[in-house]
Length: 299
Image: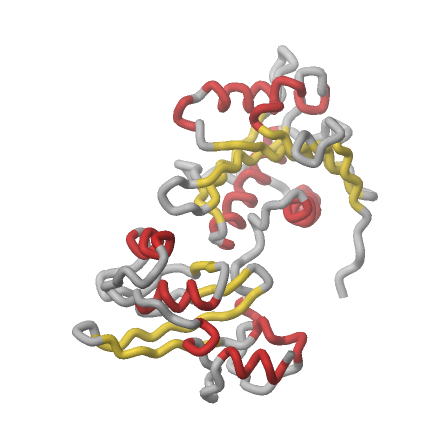
């Protein structure tokens, strides 16, 4: 069983929308959440002149998917470290998409080149695997040469950083679906509702059969990779769904290449079939119960 953790959030500007410093009991790490517009207020922070790893967060105008760039910054002889690197990104027109940064460093200035290279590599891999954000890194960061003792130490830092990242509002390292819990079960306890797969099968004139699988999660409704999406749509669906279908990650056969999150079962169903649909009656369990009946039975 996971143990509880005590997290300290300090609102540096007395505002939840401003800068936030985050520390965790029995951890030497320090995290900062810094809005892009507040970056200049951090000039007096000595710990932001150290080495560390940073994340630049934004939103794609085309896909409405979150964007993240993950980088590292080493302390330089002139005392410039993370903050100087963030200021360079702020001046770079090719990185004008980010609206806030999250930074990880330490209270004892213990990060060297080996540590930050390892962390950058691990964070990039975790972010790509979870597939919640579009990772903007052009090159795969190198892990560097690291001893097994140091690797164990850094993995512990990664575990703490996962908790902090979620606390600061970004589920960057959390997969849309916990695959280990995605079971083919039709009779479950109420607290297991997120593990039940749901299915949508529809035959559409001139297109043929579309088949999709999905699952309800605490974030919404996920249409799963491998689902077949209708190649056509009509004006009965919202414009936002039309746009998402236009940018759908599908192959030539209309097969979805990644898990996609929606705010509701109905939006998910309309995305699949390209027509207006009631998600509560369109999605069904393996034994044929529609989602409306299933929720009533387990609610």
